[in-house]
Amino acid sequence: MHSRNHPQTIIISPQQVLRDILLIFIGSILCAIAINGILIPHDFVTGGVTGISLIIHNFIPSINVGLIYLFLNLPLFVLAWMAVGRRFFFFSILGTLSLTFSLLFIHFNFNLEDKMLNALLAGLILGAGAGLCLRSSGSQGGTDILSIMLLKRFSINIGDTILTLNGIVLLLISVYYSVEAVLYTMIVVFVSSKVINLVVTGLSQRKSVFIISSQWEKISQEILKDIRRGVTIINGQGGYTRNEEKILYTVITLTEIGQLKRLVNNIDPAAFVVISDTLEVINYRIGNQPHW
Image (cartoon, rainbow, N blue to C red; front, side, top):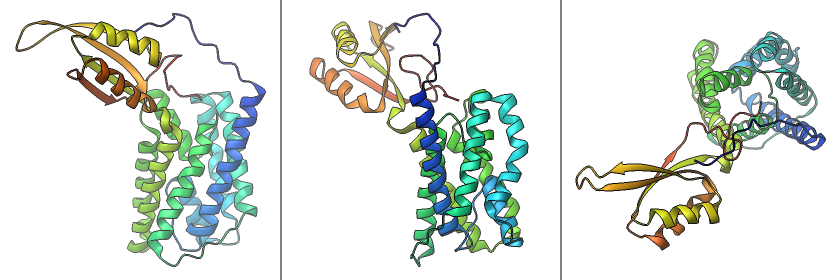
């Protein structure tokens, strides 16, 4: 695939800093609304450090859950400094402080009686808030720090890591809550982890595409010209016919799939096309590598 061979220089502009701060503040407000408005009133818990904070708050109601959350995050910041980087460290401190103050001062009550609806709504709001913070250069601390460390080191999906860590925490704390409360909490954790993946990845998810066609040359030219994506031409051979084949390989975004399908169909309706999800793509033009 055609690309330039020079390293990418990361320059943080004032606009980027303001954008990160705004994402962190909005995300923290949404998380505080979900925690104070749904989780605490309905005795739901969530996983990770937030869930542990809620449990301590239930045993010691005089201590605000935000202050407990801040205290439990202190050792995790050491990991953030050592394993991720200074920029992530400072923005994560901002995220943790923002969530702490949001939990202290933001109280919003939802008038929903159905517990299932409350669990779903809490998962949506919590996932959206955490996802917005992760779209910035930092996080809200807690399990977010561990999930980003695993993403950078092992390319493990953020939402899957958070779901697994939260599940482990739920098993540990299930002894203090009823089975019904734990089951509703599992709904909150599952929905929030999926929403986090959607918000963080969004429509920028990358797809890998293989195309086998006798019109490979024209198709590759149109991909380069119309979609403006690089194309790799691979030599292949038909397993049955033993005929020589040209296989086109390219990586596109989720929003470009429809355009690519129309382009190929207009040139060769009989073309063989395979579109697959990608775990991670690293490149300065099409890559979705971590920004932390």
